[in-house]
Length: 306
Image (tube, rainbow, N blue to C red):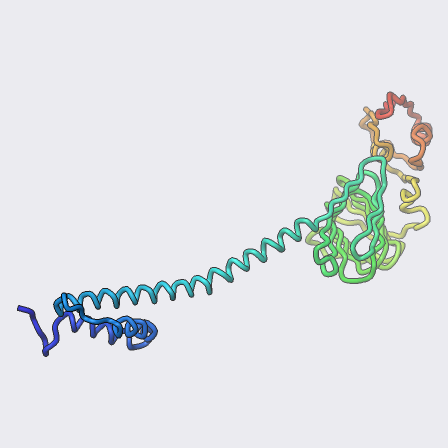
């Protein structure tokens, strides 16, 4: 015998409970869906009342599932679509930045003038490297540099040059940088620049002032004055030295003539003088005769010092 409570079957009670839940709170939209289903439902003549309740109950549950799926799809669109758009935007920025990176390498025996996006210019000496990104250059004028170069910077936002041993910050000026291995020397020709070893306070250089980095002390020297007429003469193909280790002089000779110099001596002899990069034999004479050295040109790529 079917159990009843206040004249309502358990199946009827279950269904009514479901309806009450759906009528309240967040179930209103689901309830509307169920009403649509149930309003069109008619009890088949071939089924008992209990069977009809069971079928209707199943249809209502299916209606709830359809509403849940629809709601999940809405949530998916609200979360996943913006996320996918953000990822696509980041990928696009990465691609643009990656292809905006410019690397200039000047081989030994050559010089090259580089025009930057703001019309600033850089004259690169032989065996020098420069790297920057043209992406957002107006607000991000940063260069990674190694070698020797003469910069003429247009006025604008901050302009930064990073070398192995220091950072040079300028607003609009001209200056020369020599940054090779353990040596760093900066000469300010016009305007003013800030120079700092990493994690140290910057030093201000004004026109005709220079500074050197000491690899021994890991610090910069005190700023000193220089003669702009005799400085950075490499721009005219002339290389001047004052009490410079002779091995360093031959290093420069190698860069300018793209040759190998065999210098077997481990001495501390210093050279004061100059050479030009238009005649190898004359350059060797300018170095070797004052130093009382002999040389042999083995071939176009090699010189032996004796």
